[in-house]
Length: 307
Image (cartoon, rainbow, N blue to C red):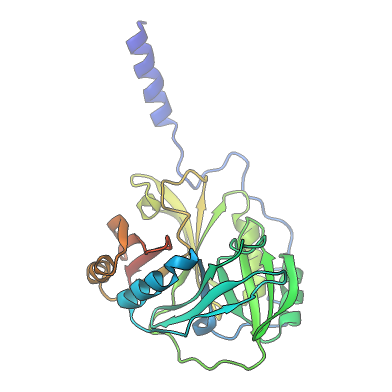
């Protein structure tokens, strides 16, 4: 067999041996854990869940203006706070939109570890009860409860690497329900997927809405392949779990939140007019279109058909 024929044969064999993202040589890790929800339900509501956005201090205004121009809503007054348990300063704003909330941080000092790794902040009824419930469900507490200017916070991490903030306000906020609840977009390995999902369900008192073993992987930039996608709903909001081999084309895995909108094309037009860039153009799925957009300052988000 000549060299060209050998290369062709090897390439053909490699193509035929490509497994869908749902396959795993090691099998899924499924640690023994009770599937019963914990007695304590510490959630408050999805209108209080915030995506944490870290941008350079100089980009805060430009980012907030672009995001509000795209989705509507309003932003709080910008102020400089210490929001970490160790010395730091950040310009901070809270952004309320009909499709989801943001906590925006533009640090004026270096960002203390592990802040910047947490994707979301979830309001809880009591910070100590919430931390106990998270630990009982199998989460690690990587920053123990500490005081902030308006309440208390803690940082927890789940099997598979998902890091989030739990927060409690001294004076309870009162926000109207969202027009549409966004998705927390979570990427986990095939080894940890079942382990993570069981633990999150136990903590959140959530339910699996769908568990699709062979969804179109074009939704994460890999058309002509399949992927396992798990949709979970709870009083903490929506969660979309992508079970992958970690081989993700940019920008997938960088987006933390998916926003449901009435018209994807019109939303992208408004975003671009406000200085954002479309990183992944609309991709048609069985439930509508999905696209990825980057806002000034570097925040990457998904938008999808919410009809």
